[in-house]
Length: 260
Image (cartoon, rainbow, N blue to C red; front, side, top):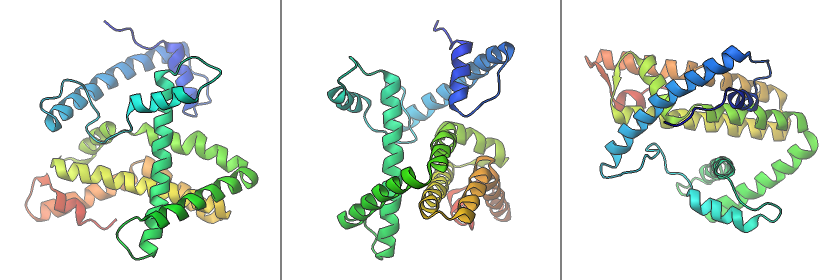
């Protein structure tokens, strides 16, 4: 039987999530129990979805998305280290998360440029411009907006990471009041992440421009997203569309037809 996390360790993790208040010893122990319960739920859901997608697989996977290869990333990191002797799993996971955030930001920017170019394919010239813009924005943010930059990395990115695909699916099922087809559920999750990525992109762009009003607007949209206001609205509209068609199940076309 595996040992759970130490209460003190969970407390340190909470600090990394932006929780500055002191956590009592009793609460620390309760959090460990809550996390164990949630992990059982997540693991079982992952197991079911893994086997649904890959019936012959013998290893638990993240069926909702393809991630950068753990061993490849670890090997590349080992090639770069000089003052330490090895690379921990935590370091690899953190690096992969940072790489995937970077990939998302670059591709969102390149997509915008491709759209402005009125083409349906991201081409090398779009990527070149997006990369150049990202380097310029990084330099401007480092020199002109250190406080906002710190706030973004300390809270915004962390909050986006808190809601995993599995937890989102569980939330959707609780909010909908109706059963969702798998395709409808997958589409809703993709829309959620697209919306989150758009908010993040606009926030970064407005920080670079120094547009305070738009920065506040992006933060308001972000808070609404995290409070699941956007999700509730989409599900309510989709549910109403399903009911108008005499369906007890929310289908893909009900989600797609909702005005976002």
